[in-house]
Image 1 (cartoon, rainbow, N blue to C red):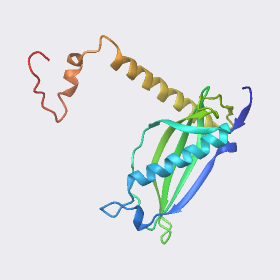
Image 2 (cartoon, rainbow, N blue to C red):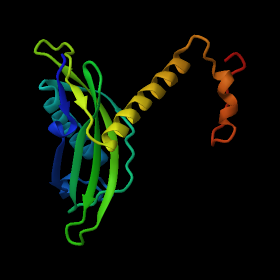
Image 3 (spheres, rainbow, N blue to C red):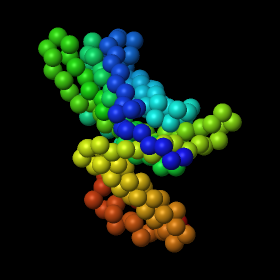
Length: 184
């Protein structure tokens, strides 16, 4: 597949008023509800780019930076930051606005890896990405770096020579007590 699409061609934004039914026991909006909305916008953005049904392969960096209150307007913005052969990394930014005061806060930024599927459920190629500005180039490069770091970590931990003994000194500065049997 030799076609390319601009990032703007699949950029999506959704807004939703947060209701009491979305809250947890402490009165804040439930993180699971926000994750569900994020998954929906990632699907829509990736499907719009690929013109295919898409599934979530992984989610990277979900940090809840600020709580979201009942009555706030949550806006999620999504764009394709990276494309592989059949996968796309969708960047999502979540903001909440107090509609009475106009105060806006950044609540979350996350990266969803989505995979395009054909009618038989097999992974299918996606269009390339045309990067039009410095931020789009940075986002693409950051996605590459996150993937590289993840592969290095996975290789290190899955390697046949990996031994927990080599890593025990890392635990000295943490709130943990090691009480292993002698033969462990």
